Structure formats: structure tokens, C-alpha cells
Length: 427
Ligand SMILES: Cc1ncc(COP(=O)(O)O)c(C=O)c1O
Image (cartoon, rainbow, N blue to C red; front, side):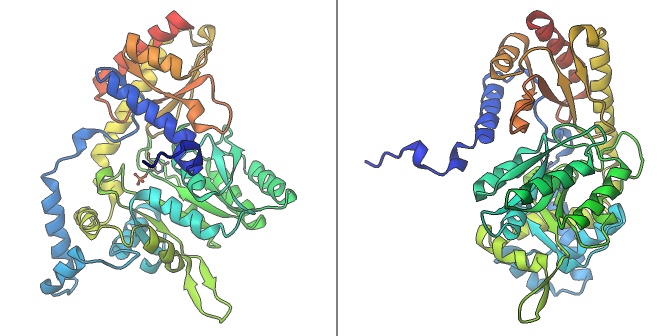
């Protein structure tokens, strides 16, 4: 009988972040009645399976209106397909409408969720062990997990009050170079980041692009929460400000449409020059990576998202008005509940971030917010949250992430009340 040593398997199998997330899921399963301020997924009330056949039909009507003969639909939707997908044109229109991003459809590669876009971008950019990626810390575990899978080192750049101090990016890039390695790109979530909820100021966005140019860095911009600001302030995406093809935009439809489609995309309009003089776009080159990962993103799933985009007139900002209103109300409810249940926050050694949108708030607490406290919290107090330590290379020991996206607004206050009791009894 083949018995394998777990330690002999690749390190990604023992990925500490995956282990942490499994622990969280396992606690959630054991205490199904606990109120989850841990889950960052979208609210289930937005998901109606009756929409699916309609989206599929709308997409086929769109194909017909674009001049495709109906006898070709079967091959398009049910055969193997083009590696970079069939939604480049619709996604380019949506980005132009919602974000002021102007890119040709060939610069878009449709991926199996944003997660695959991260893997493809990292794999394509980092050619050898000397190539590393910078990432704003605390970070989304999807990027560090992807890097670990690929054996790529991630160098943290600490988050700052304005989201990011661009000078810290330059300092990190120089330190990497001084150590004989190449910083290839910086990963950043400029709007309402996961996990911190922080956003980059407009000045930091422009300064970051200048630093990227000066330090010869690419920027991996991930923006799944940008539609969910508490106000209607325009927050220009880095890609919209990008004059020098420095930004690779990683797109997710998980929050703006629905995560079960597993459709995301990347935008890579960087020109690539081969030694024989042939010029292509980076997205076209990266298709070689994608073809060996998932061949192509399910055309059925693409057609569903395509129909949704067509129905939305290629504006997710408009189509998401109800979602935006719901998440705004939830975030305001969460912030108000923190005020209510921690009336003497400073005296209790507690403070929290006040994000201008998104799904997440970080609560700093006077006790270690570790697995033990989480277990106690779930079992005795009936509330779940995420230890911030999961999102750091080191640090985050006395903080927890609260998410308000998946809950009915009425449950949020009770969840925070339970959390306040946990901290009062165990602080
Ligand atoms: C910052 C960030 N990027 C990407 C994703 C995942 O995107 P997808 O579901 O499209 O793979 C998430 C999901 O939580 C996220 O928070």
C-alpha cells in the first residue's frame, strides 16, 4: 500500500493559509448557528437560479444580433474554445463604461475566476527564482497562495493610513534589488481592500504609478469591491490612470455578478517584443499558461456572464445598484453596531477601521485573536470572525476581520453584541 509522507508533498499542500481557512470552514461547519462575521462571500439573496437560462438566451440573442449563424452556437458554447475566451469585447465595453479603462478586446483574457488570473499573471511574469513579487500586507490569501503554489517569493510592503505609502514600494523594490533579486510587480487592491477595508487615496494612486515607472515595476491591480463604495465618489482605477502600460488589471465577477460562475479575467495590454521583431500583447502570450491550466474557461459559464453583461448594457455599476445599496446598508450597520456595543472603545483597548466602502472592517483587540479565541467565540458566544494573522507574513496577532456582506442586516447588530460579550468576558 502506498503511504505518502505529508512532509514530502509540495509545500503548497501544507499551505498555512489554506490550513487556516480550512480551520475557519471547519469551525463554521461545527457551529452552523453561529452568526458569521467571517464569511466574505456575497449575500445569497442576490442569487436566483431562474436568471441562468435567461442569461444564456440573452447571450445567444446577442450572438445572433452580432451576425453569427445559430448553427455555430453549439460549437461556441459546447466545444473546446478559444483559450482567452469569448467575452473580450463585452468586458472591454464594460471596463470603458464603468471604469474609463480603454483596452482592445485582445488585451482581455477570460479566466476561471480572478484566482486563475493571479496564477497566470504570476507564472508569466516570474521567469526564475530571482524574480519576486511585492504585495501590500495584510494581503488577500489568494495572491500569496498562488505565489506559494508557483514557488515565487512574496515581499511584503506594509499598508499605510492612505492605503499605501508609495515611497515604501520604492524602498521595498530597492531592497529586493540590493539583495540580488528582481521585483517584477506589486500586487494591490486599491479599493476597500480585503482584509483591511482600506483604499488608496487619489494622490497615492498617481504616486504609485510614477514609482512603478521609476522602479520598472508592473502593478497587479485587483478590484473586486470597487462598485461598493459608501458614497458615489469616483475612485479612478490604476488601469484608467495608466499611461505607460504598467498595470495588469485582475477582474472578478464574483461580487458584481455571482461567484459560482467562476468567471474572471485579466487585462494585459503590455506590448511584448520577440527577438525576431514580432509584437504581441502580454494577454496573448499569457494564453500559453492558461491553456495548460484550464484549456479555456467554461464557455457555458462565459455565456451566462455574457448574457448578464448584455442585459446590463455592459455597465455593472448600473446593474449593481441594488447590491451597492445593500452592502452600503450592511457596512453602515456594522460600523454603527461597533459604536453601540463598544461605547468605551479606548478604555477597552479596542479600535476599528472605518472604511469608505466594501465588505470588511478590522477590529483591534487587547487579547490574541487566535484560533483558541475563535473556537471559544463560536462555541460559547455564537459568533465567527477571521483572525487577521491569516493575512500577514508575521503580525496581525491582536486583530480580527469582520465581514458584513453575507448577512441579513438584522443579524449584524446581534453578531457584534456577541463579539462585545466575548471580549468583555475574555479581555
Ligand atoms: C481581493 C480579492 N481578489 C479576488 C477574489 C476572488 O475572486 P474570484 O472569486 O473571481 O476568483 C477575492 C474574493 O474574495 C478577493 O477578496
